[in-house]
Image 1 (spheres, rainbow, N blue to C red):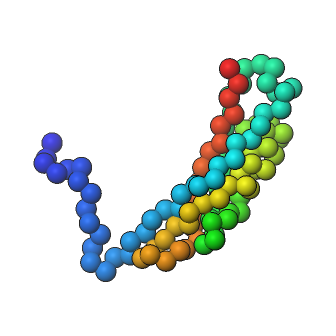
Image 2 (cartoon, one colour):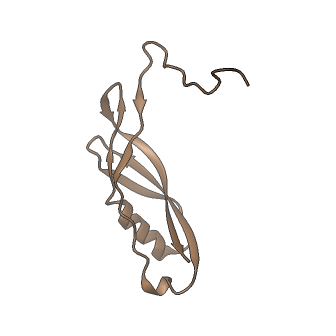
Length: 105
């Protein structure tokens, strides 16, 4: 292994410095009682369009296979708030693909 292989490189002079949006408020969906009767695990994948004010529009990318869980995930995800992404210190709109996991053991 070469020394310094894992060191991060500094951006080239004049290259934009971009920081990704970060979730600040994460609302977890509540699994209804009738769906907690047996063990399950499901993942819902969402695409967040994060605006410069920290709010976000959310759309489904991958379903859990259960429309009720999908609706719960979307309802919860619409309440999330973010620290917006920045480019050269200025807030910019960005996109994040995140997952919400449902798990009953």
